[in-house]
Amino acid sequence: MKKVIVIGASGSLAKSVIEAVKPLESIKLSLFLRNKNRISKELSKDCEIFEGDALKFDDIKKAVSGQDIVYVNLEGNLELMTENIVKAMQELGVKRIIAISSIGIYETPLKPVLVPYRKLADIIEKSGLDYTILRPDWFTNIDEVDYTLTKKDQPETGSAISRKSIADFVSKLVNYPNLYVNENLGISKP
Image 1 (cartoon, rainbow, N blue to C red):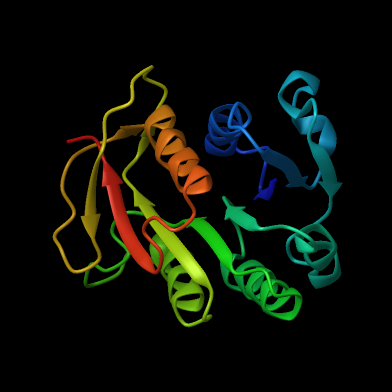
Image 2: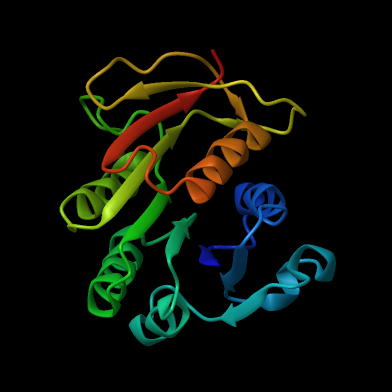
């Protein structure tokens, strides 16, 4: 049984990821969010809920304890939140992290809105954890699974991608945690 926690579970992309991961066999899903009322009872059914703030190390450490895979889908002060998550994982011996960053974080000059997403990627890459960082293009609600991947040193290609496509790829990483370890990938619609 793999224990997986979704940090930032009330986000629109996270909800798609939860829907994609829940049907997988031998998965115990936990959800971390500030307010448990921001997620439907149907979506959170059979999941362990951790109510907390990713800016508070003790909240993160409690939620990460005993997990096998940490999926990070946050916004805001990503530098502090990512530092908290990485520190908790290191202290607890939790190795596998999948994190959502953003397309464009390696462009020069870096747009100010992308600075937090670049910091998230930099912190995770230096962490010593088994990471997969995803840099998606803009999200859509289109009901399709159609995506292409680009490596960190390749030009980012493609266009806006469905949340369902990203969720499909994340569910593959959860199901097969040895895929794309220590990879930083652009993901977009071809």
